[in-house]
Amino acid sequence: MGNKQTVTLEPKTTPKGLNIMLKIINLTKVVKLLGDRPYVGEISDRLIRLVVKHGLGYLPFLEKQEVTPTGYKEKFEFCKKLCGVSIIRSGESMENALRACCKGIKIGRVFIHRDGDNGKQLIYEKLPNDISERHVLLLDPVFATGNSANQAIELLIKKGVPESSIIFLNLISAPEGIQCVCNRFPSLKIVTSEIDAKLNEEFRVIPGLGEFGDSYFGTDDYFVPIE
Image (cartoon, rainbow, N blue to C red; front, side, top):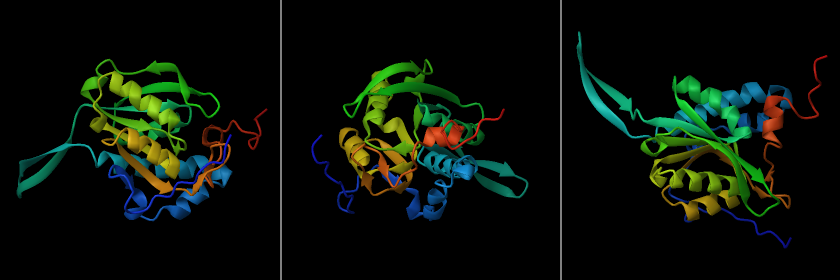
């Protein structure tokens, strides 16, 4: 591998589809607490729900008025055609928060196998039959190189989902991944809680959250199995 170039997102080069929650609420301390692994599940669930709620704000909605005993009241209805798609395995950690915010929502899954640093291989996909008619919330907590996201987005577009109907939700992002995906899919919306410094030589986000899936589901060496 050659020397890897560090990408910095300046205000003039920030993609228009990128939405950082830090502009609205300071989540830096909450994000860094995820490194305290005994609390990773509890803290990340809270943060994931905030990210999901923020992402829902970018969906189209209808403004209506209903008559109440005290007069007229404005009412907003989100689009009814909505689904989630998680990128296995870390993406599954975001499903509960999505279900809590959207009762009865359909959730599909894609499994993309990592193969070195040269793209991914689609191993498994299970998506709603009518996904082409839906807005899609794509779920993956750690957004690193963007290779998995690119393949998942390409799959959704092949299934008939308009690029502008996809909202990619994640907790931590790397500048390299953001540039890679946004350059390829300029109409895509990305909602993240924080952009970290860079990727290291192993293409991991620095400082990042480590192996988020293992920490969240309790399958890394830190957790002692119950006998």
